[in-house]
Amino acid sequence: MLLEIKELSVEFQSIQGKLQALKNVSFSMDEGEIIGVVGESGSGKSVTALSILGLLEKNAKITQGSVFYKGKDVLRLGRKEQQQLRGKEIGMVFQEPMTALHPTMRIGDQLAGVIKRHRQVSSKEAAQLAIRSLAEVHIDHPELVAGKYPFELSGGMRQRVVIALAMSAPPTLLIADEPTTALDVTIQDEILKLMKELSVKRGTAIMFITHDLGVVARLCNRVIVMYAGEVMETGITSDVLHRPAHPYTRALIGALPDWADPNEPLSAIPGETPNLFNRPAGCVFADRCPQALPLCREDRPALEAYQDNQEHRVACWVR
Amino acid sequence: MQPLIELKSVSKTYGSGKKRFQAVTDINLTIQKGESFGLIGESGSGKSTLAKMLIGLEPPSSGTIELAGKPLWEGDKFKPQRPGEMQIVFQDPQSSLDPRMTVKEIILEPLYALSAGERKQKGSMERLQQLITRVGLKTDQLSRYPHEFSGGQRQRIAIARALITEPKFVILDEPTSALDVSVQANVLNLLKELKHEHQLTYLFISHNMSVIRYMCDQTAVMYKGEIVETGPIEDIFQHPRQAYTKTLLSSLHPLQAAGVNQAENHSNELSP
Image (cartoon, rainbow over all chains, first blue to last red):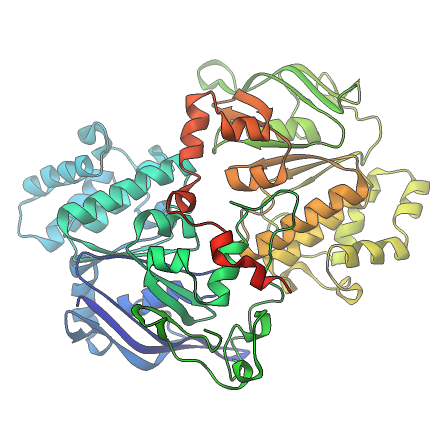
């Protein structure tokens, strides 16, 4: 097992009080595996990633749980050890490629800098490796692009550069937070193909954080469905998408216009996400759930096997 | 039948000399009254430039744009027959609502383009209350400010603002692409209902093919400033002729390719 998150809970301190952003989040990843963490805004998918990386803001506090990476609890590591983990062991790609790149530094120099940090090479070798890493993310004329600044590149090209940066160590785990959301659909397609290819070629595990079930279907072996800071359902992607066990997963799939009959209204999810300052005692989805029982509002369901399938787990009383 | 909107060889060029950039090239387009016309394209394809020329924000460099047979532009001057006849809902409700105005002020603002008589009639408290309830907000929220609302609610405010002048034609420029899937479903349902209730004609701009398929009757595909394909929605989706349309469609169906469909998901159980 490469990564194991156990009962992770995170709180944010704000003027309005304590906001519980994550509650008892547990899941694991194997080496080389591509998993999708899917959810809407406020579901806690990005907070999960930032917790693993030790990049939470100062007002955030991990109140409970542990994150084991290769058997070591990364939450108990010192600042220096965490820094070594980031970049070298765990790479990151975020949504907006422009903010991830240094605006006044040439692409080649940025890459060479990262390569020198992680490997024992001379500046000259690093520059050559930088060009090679650009070629690996399928950038045409890598020597030329190495001499350019980020603003001279298109959004898709920039995201390729960011992926090249993240992969340069190369890491064992890549955490990608909505890396294709800001890109056009056809470019998105190319980036997804590239990430899959790199994962297969180098055995890099990818945690793909997204709001897009289509992306999950295309890329991920397994999926974690999150809602309001909790895991609602996990399983092999095709199991979860074909036989969604949680009413929230079903509602999310049903709300997509992809298959809807244009003459019928879309099945929207009524109500709003719960107040995370004051979490309900029972299931977080109960207030919006069409199948909720009285029990659902009293007791929080645990994540348990669905129809005896140990891989497919769901946190729901109405199974 | 006379089309509601007609574009005849419309082009738009920005800059001159070396920096000359042709954003839109020779567009011919007709939108019939009561239609939902979809405009699909990626960033930089010219779809927003087209919307700007329709709504009066940018004059076309050449060609004519007509609304109900009357030209909208006289040279560089925007001369609509009746102000408020056309409205627009923008993509990002975060930036399209003035943070210092109350919801009431925001919704009533378009009426300043109208005559005093019309303003009084359309801006009555009763009508305002009716409209705000219709888009799914409460009347006591009229005195609040945009930051007090969620993204979906803000887009509802923007929709109410677009409808206050009783327009015939509404441009929806990526109205749901900043919203979560479940919120998007609510807003799309609302837009469909309003279209029916007010006999509106929509120009629906989006890069999301499944939203276009769900919302529109007719569609045009834009690529690099040109319309590469146009026709009824089913034709474009079932029998795309252009390579570019096919590429767009192939990026659309990952869930279908994975064999997921709604029937399997027992979506009926979800209906209240």
